[in-house]
Length: 528
Ligand code: ADP
Figure 1 (cartoon, rainbow, N blue to C red):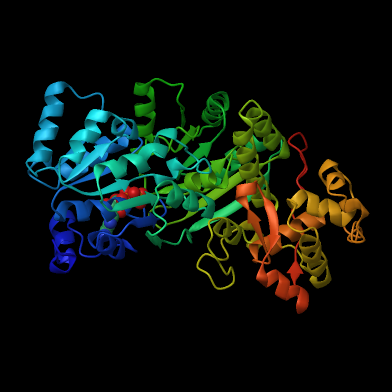
Figure 2 (cartoon, rainbow, N blue to C red):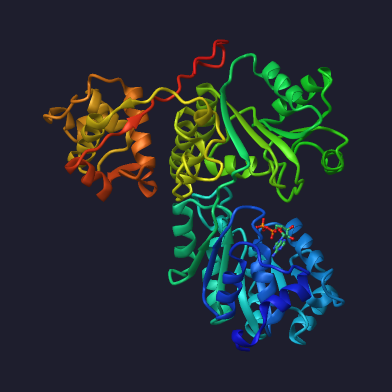
């Protein structure tokens, strides 16, 4: 079938009842209908499913949709079936099916009835399934939650690594990968591991202009601070994330004692209690859910007004996903994170039992969270830069929606310091991560610096007039401004960009603000 012959607007209305495509959907659908490999990066709620569901429904053959979670697959299949009078239009193929059920699925596919076949990656590794799929017309393969293929994503699944070979066996069909994880490293991994460097990429903006970002020092008074915050948002729904089940239970209890209706949610509760607590939240019988990260997948409550992180998350992807559950209706959404370096150390300790490569990745991701918490620049700009997106906090939508922009620190001229820092990066020849660059500037030795004999260079200690914290803040700011880039593959080697080299030649004014000072968790005073 030729894509030009299809009126996709008409089909959109017919199947989904929508009169317009949302965001980049139309371009994505058109790309897939042209049989191009296609890569879609859209934040949660962006409307990814329709990008492959519509092309599947209007083409001949069956589209194979790979998805990591059985529960999500079931929801999707139910949703598609509700659009049609034929149950066979969508099926799930997994190991829980009986022989009779499998026979029915195969019959519906062979007869051309089934347009969407959802499979878990492990079902695709089964020889018999691959052999079957080879024998029937497949329109395309969709890889949902494609970030699962990358160790740099927040949900690595080794089974995703086999997909490339299996798709090749199934035949020469177009592939569409979809994800809500937007870091450049994960994107690169997806394209490489799915062998689709030629894919047409569609990336939506990750800016959520209605969310307000705030970080507060975590003191021993954190609980009363949370209670005060919730009271200021009386009658509104919110989620509080904690790292441990124990903390979830404790905080839920404290809230209840203080007259706030709250329920706990974590994987240690039985399924019935979890479902009950989730429903209570959705039906607004309780204001607050205190949860571990187990809560949230597939939760679509549009009017969550605040998301509080009692403990910092282990990566900015997780932070973005979790805070993304606030304000889905476009209304107010306050994202408040409590930060203490002790929590960082706890997470590091927790990682130390893992294999070395995993540890290094975990550590690098955690450092980004630290940088986000400590920075005094626009948090939205910082977050979006992390996702490979440029943002101007003076003109961009939502540019004034964070604590740093609302209460800016005094900025100071740092033109000469920027030049000094850039020269050190250039002259140490891209050997170092942030820490060693800053050490070189202040003249501190460590094993890495000794090994490269940087301590005998003339520029060693050339920035001793400022302290470590100053240089780290400046380095992070010029990274975000694009004078430097960080190579995540090497766990954070910092390099100078062309823009940085140009700055050395023609320096201009650069106003920097120092990072926030955070006292540790036992201290009550807040120094911001
Ligand atoms: P994602 O998978 O990116 O998180 P979904 O596919 O679940 O997003 O879509 C999010 C919401 O947007 C759903 O409620 C869906 O019905 C709605 N939606 C998708 N496309 C459109 C459209 N073209 N017009 C209106 N609503 C849409």
